[in-house]
Image (cartoon, rainbow, N blue to C red; front, top):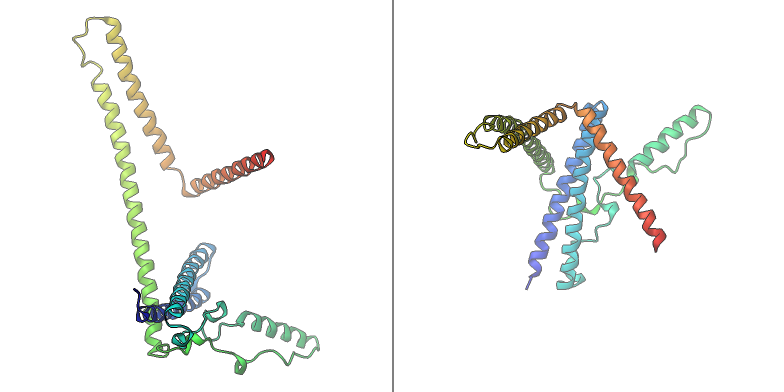
Length: 264
């Protein structure tokens, strides 16, 4: 039987991880806005921030499941400190409505230049509501240290992923080199074995064995040439062909779906 203390620990742990990942997300967004330029680097930064956002959502789902289980075990009275986690609660202090507020202020400045009066009902700093996850127990314990810890954790994960992909690339290149070496060795092996059956008296059989050995050697030579040509293709060209193949596959799937829809 699962005790309520386990669910309480799960809720607390999920909130701690949620706050840490939100801190890391804000840090990487600020770093991207200040230092990242160019399409390639911007795409990498956007992918990284998206992955952190997925971890934030995973922590939120884990908290919701643990809170639901705690309510079933202890009732509503046992979950007073764990409030319902809504989508608008998953944000850092100051993130709520930041885009809309900035847009309204910019529009007000434009209208002010045209002689119009800036709206008075625009929300200010005094009306901003902090999400309850930042006032929950444990949220204010050495917040600066938690920020640096969360950033270090995310950096370590990204660094480990980078090293793993570098290792995968090294392994793949070594496998490609060994495949070419093997095909060259196999072709040479067939050339060396053309005259092994010197004891065959029938000229037709000897000619057939020689032809078969030459055929196998030529097959391995052509395979090696094909792989080498493919593997020396520029990365941009390979990516373009891959995208074209995926687009063709999607189009074929759509045609099949349309065909079967007419049969129903």
